[in-house]
Length: 233
Image (cartoon, rainbow, N blue to C red; front, side):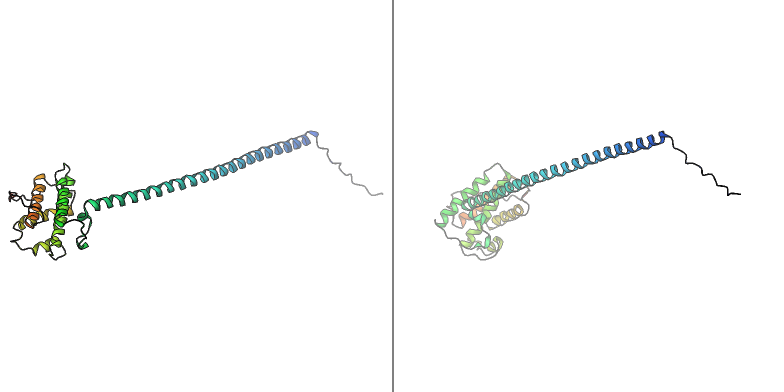
């Protein structure tokens, strides 16, 4: 008998709608990828714009910072110049207050007594002010003026107190009053924010003035200031 041939099953034909779904899915995929790509492209463009804008802002910011720094430098130079000018004018008006105690003798273009008289007029002007800070300035300058007088007279020492200790009491009868005024000066120098009464300041200035007259650098008056001591406040 001839061999029996097995029957091969014919492949099933897929329906047409399956191919339609695959094509639709492919189209949708392409559309989604295109949309995502468009968003990515737009986002990348925004990023590039942001970087460019930040770069422009930073360049402008650096320019602004440079201009501000230049203006501050110019202002600092002007401030230093103005400070030096004020210091120079103050040194011209009140050299005794500017020079340190150990600055040594200064060359004088006018007689010593006349110079002291002019300096003392400036001290009295501060003392007659209505400002307590200028009262303190008057005491400080009066003490510096006394120090200059003592140095001019040849009294040695590193401080006003040391020079006063070398003064002959017969030459300076008001020595106790001057020492009291000098103690007030130290209080003012150590704590300039403390306000002292006008009576205390006036008494100290009167003590300095009396000392200058006794030392012969100011013309003597017929009347002598009162010797009642007012304790510093």
